[in-house]
Image 1 (cartoon, rainbow, N blue to C red):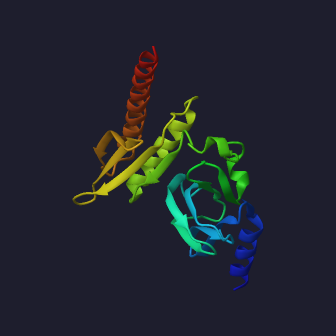
Image 2 (image 1 turned 90 degrees about the horizontal axis):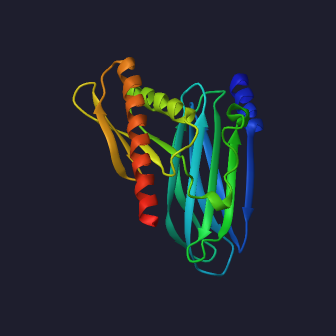
Length: 238
């Protein structure tokens, strides 16, 4: 029991919340830690007498010994006067020294004005200067990668891809999603998408060298895809 209490106190001391709200609308990140899993819930709270049509974005970035991952959830919703609404939930596996940053933004749909925001940091020193606060004028979140893998092989591929992607000087102006679909036996199909456009896919095998090679190949395909996309966009402007 003493060890559990010490751990919980350490987690509490390492957590930092930062919240801001206006117009009677508040956003709040709620967490629950159980057996190495951190459940994160984003909520919107109205103390106003006004009906609102809103958008939200919640982004979580984890870095540490249990793996790196990024998750983004967003959508439209309405909020009645004096209503509290759950917007999104996600669960993240957290080791003792893992770093985590979570950001929640709530915006008015018509004006795109930020009405409320909240953020959470756990062991922020893990990030150094890699991840800083996301300003309101960069809610497009360029360079975001999302981990939607399901197995150990999928996680190994994501970690390899994530490391390689972080080494290139300029990130893509898009969201990259790594997804995994279970297949027969121990194999699964991994897909790499950019803004919902399928870029590359392959079937996994229990071979770490193969996963490393596929990570390099996927990144090379993405670099080529974005280079050609930029050329097309430039030609279109003229």
